[in-house]
Length: 151
Image (tube, rainbow, N blue to C red; front, side, top):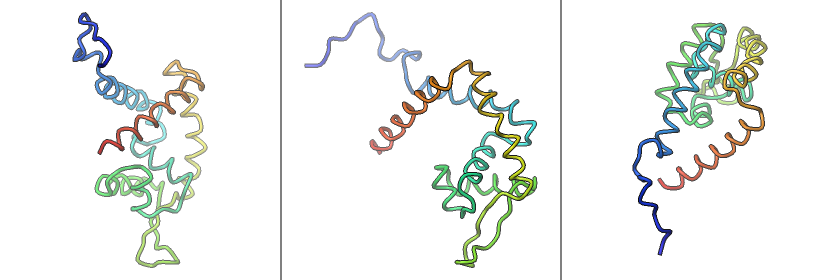
């Protein structure tokens, strides 16, 4: 037999739902990034693309899609806008001419220097320490793995 439920606690109360807290937190954190990323000329999804490219370029659309866990159809417009801004370029891979590789341009590599202030500014804006954010990150990764295991 399971634990006795406290009848004074409504298990279906909106404010007790993890899914609700995650949804509101996600929207709120992305909104908090907006004023920090605007001077860089990036939206939050574009910032994620650039983070992946700064760390792993060159990448094919398929590799980038897998890394960011985004559908290629969602990713393609982001890449096109970043290319139009002069931050990334697409070139054929020398080892496989059929595959396009995406990589930061010189302008995109310079942007990385400006982006170094983003994590520090976000910690300040969120009022959370590096340790708190590290713990939150670890818990979120556990949650992601657990949720994927239920599919």
